[in-house]
Image (cartoon, rainbow, N blue to C red; front, side, top):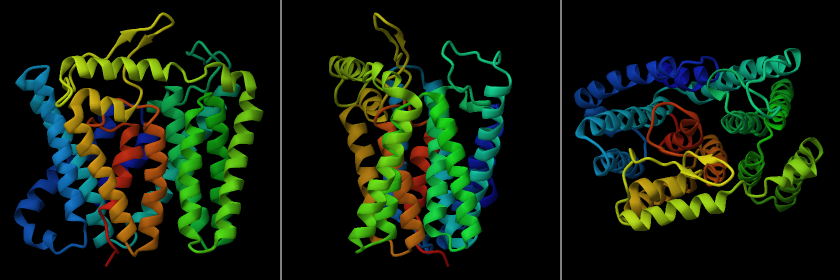
Length: 375
């Protein structure tokens, strides 16, 4: 179970095939379902947040059934299967934390190493083979499933937050230095993608980490946050330049969100239009393929009920982290959740899906938030 969860996260950076990346999640689901049935009593004694688990299950089932508003029963079963993959993946994290003391650090270290391999090779190809540029703009075309510049930047941003977590918690100087080098490599790749929203998400995640790592020490907290904001702002300005940084303005986000909110109101504001509904529309400048915000997408597909359930799940995660006395769990999940919420407020589509970058940004921090202190 723990191995499958680690493989799911690490090979996301290493293989191109979505089916290959999903394979460990199939094994995870096949192992988890019988275990829950046969050893339900043993699972009930684990130190996990059962309220958050129930809210997560409720949200996933509701969004999966929303497909029925827009398509056939066959697509509903497929959506329910995807929801089961997400749920068993989330549940495997607190169970693995409770049973294996090495799980959390192993997960973080292996994902960082996998991201280094993807990032380093992508940067090498970007400069060594200038003709290897399928995109219209000279933006980094990452390998595998990170080929979209926005997806690549958010994925490298996730790895950067993991590296920042290791810098904040590691006592060995050589480990801190190695993680700092990895973070700089990821930031270089993020700059090359030309994406901008990830800087705001990084500022949120790292700032939360500094505040939680040094509770009560206002001077260090403020210096850490100011340093983080200054470095990210200066990096974005120096490497992207003022023209690239500001010329796309808000990248049509207000127009996109207004359109999908209007569609929701015109369809069914309470239950939405269903996840299988077409989500494209044409702006004068370009074709928009999705709502570009997980919050707006959840409202569009699941209506007010879906969005409220999603917000309840997020708020319960925050409450669970606040009550958790295990500092490493609280710190890592809070950093990733702050990063993920800021990032997905500006981008993202269907949140109930097979393995993609939203599993990193949303489902991993929620899975960690379900955990209590390891045995």
